[in-house]
Image (cartoon, rainbow, N blue to C red; front, side, top):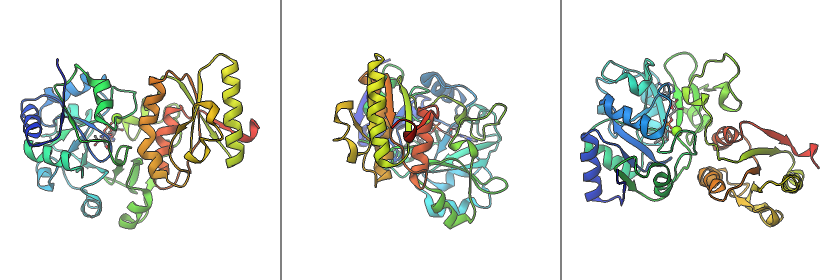
Length: 348
Ligand code: TXA
Ligand code: MG
C-alpha cells in the first residue's frame, strides 16, 4: 500500500473523511500525539488498527469525538463526567464511561467501559466533524515504540501500512492524554498526562493516582489500564535514570558514560539544557530546561526516537520531579527505562 503524507487542508480532510467512512485507517495530529484512526463503530476497521500497529488485542482504544451529542446511545455518562467535560474538553483528558452494545468489543478489548476523548487540535476536530463518526484511535506508533509527535515519526512507523497521514506539524503537549476513571469509588488517574492531578482535584475534590504509574506492575497485580502491562516507549538502547542532587547527577552521568564506553558501548546522556555544556563529551540530548517540565514533555518522545536513529546502545538520563506534568514525564521515562534507576551518590 502506498502511504500519502498530505498537509492538512480542505482537500486532504475530505479525503480523510471518505477513507474513514470506507473503513480505512487515517493518521492525524492531536494536541497530545498523532493518532491512528478508524471508524469506532466498524469492528473490521478497528481490527485493521491492531494489525497496522502490531498491538496486542487485549489493549483497548480511545474513541474520539468532536461533539458531546455523539455520546448518545454509545455510553452512559458517569455523574462526575459532565463537570470534567466542562472544564477540560476539548483537550487532553480521556474519561472512561460504561458502554452500550453499540460499541464493538474490539474497541474496548471486551471491557464494559469505553475511553472517550474530545481532542482540541483544529485538524483533529475538523476531521472528526467531516466524517461524522466516533473515531477509535491509539497513538500512531508501532506497538512498543514511543508515540509519534510529528508526521515524520508516523511515516517511519506506518509507511506502506496505511493510506493517509495528515500532517499538522509537531504536537503541542507531546505526551498522551490523561486517562481518568470516575465510574466507581474515588476518581483515579490511570495514565497521567497534560491535565494534571491538581487540575482534576480542583473540579472533583480528591483524585488518586494508580499505583502502577511510577513502578512496574507487580506479579499477579491487575492492570487498571491494560496499556500499563506492556513494554512501552522504549528505544532499542538501554536507558538508565540517574537521580540525586544536581551536581552529583551531572558528575555521575559523565562517569557512567565513561565506564560504558570503556566497556565498548556507544553511550550518551539525556540531560537538561543547563547541563549540555558540562556533558558536551557525552553526546548530550537536550531534554529542555530544568525549570520547564512542559518542555521536557514536549521533547521526550522525539528524543527517544533520535537515540535509535543514532544507534545509541546505553543511555543515561536525568529525571524531573514527579509533580504536575512531571508525573506524566516520569511515567513515560520510567517505562522507557524499565524503571532502571541509579542514585548519583552511589557513583560519585
Ligand atoms: O492522547 C491520547 O490519548 C492519544 C491520542 C491519539 O488521542 N491516544 C492514545 O491512545 O494514547 P493509546 O491507545 O496509545 O492509549 C490508550 C490508553 C491505553 O493505556 C489503554 O490501555 C487505556 O488508554 N484504555 C483504553 N480504554 C480503556 C478502558 N476501557 N479501561 C482502562 N484503560 C483503557
Ligand atoms: Mg500508545
